[in-house]
Image (tube, rainbow, N blue to C red; front, side, top):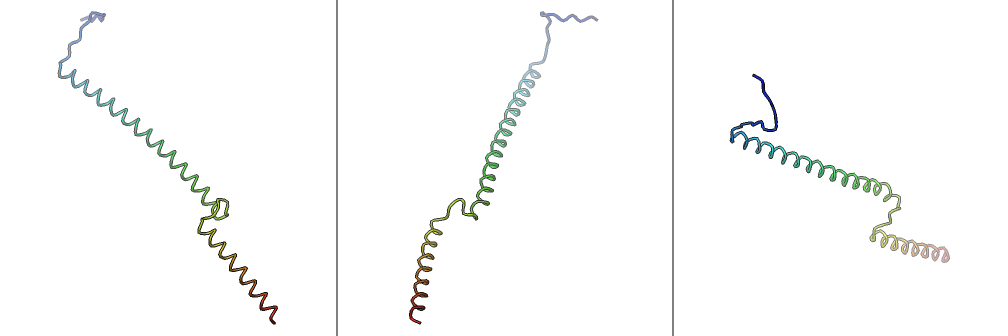
Length: 99
């Protein structure tokens, strides 16, 4: 039995199998694009987290050294301490003069 394949050859397939094949291809295509979308989202999220970790590491190193400034409360506290130190020094000098 010799089979000749040409542009006029016909293939018969049951309609039910053709519909199932189309549904399968559609589901696989949707799954693929969903997977690619999820991977892209996770890569983007990983990049953002990496940026936050680098900024936190820089903050962790520079904040104790005072390279990133100070809190407003710290500045106010420092001003008050300087004022108290000045007052204490004046009191000590007055005591030395009175002795």
